[in-house]
Length: 150
Image 1 (cartoon, rainbow, N blue to C red):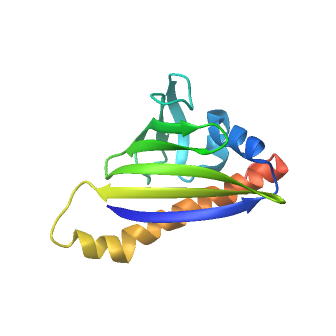
Image 2 (tube, rainbow, N blue to C red):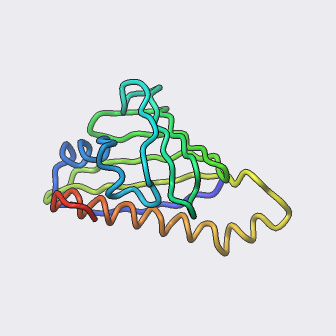
C-alpha cells in the first residue's frame, strides 16, 4: 500500500473541527471531488456506519466509506472503495494552544495493477492523491474558520 498525508492547522477547537468534519451535509462544500451524498447509513460517525457519495463526471465515480474506528475528539478511520482503489483513510484532531491540527492520511492500493503500476503510482497517482488531501483540508479550514464555502 502507498501512503499520502496532509495536515492543516485551524483556529478552532477540536470539538468544532470534529463537528464540521462529521457533518455530511457540509461535505459538498469542501470534500475534493464530491458532487453529491447518496446515502448515510447507521449512526455516523460511529463504527459500522457508512457514507456513499458520487464524484463529478471526470472524478472517481461512486465512493463508499465505512467506519472501522472512531474516537470522539480523537479521530476516525474509514475503509474507502471506489472503482480504482481500496484504501483506509484516517483523520485525527490534535489540540494546540491556538486551535488544532487536522491530519488526513490515506493508505491506498490501486485495484487494476500491472507491471508498470508502481511507476505510474510514483509519478502520477501519489501526487494526485496528496493534492486532493491538501485541497480537502484547505477548503475544510476555510469552511471551519469562516462558516462559508471554500
